[in-house]
Length: 83
Image (cartoon, rainbow, N blue to C red):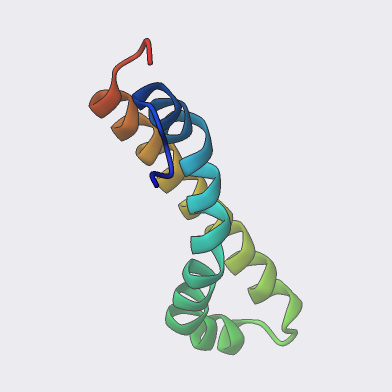
């Protein structure tokens, strides 16, 4: 039993679905990585916790979206434009 019975469904998933799955799954991990790297420094710079949290959230969003766009471009190279 195969997950994708034909190659066209696999191509469609790789173009549209995989970047969304990637974004949802990896966003918390990227958040934790950025929080552990930049959180202590940001907490020393700002007296309230909301500002570092917003900065890390925006950075997480930017990194995750850029990686999802890169994954989309990679899938287009691998599976072509008309699949």
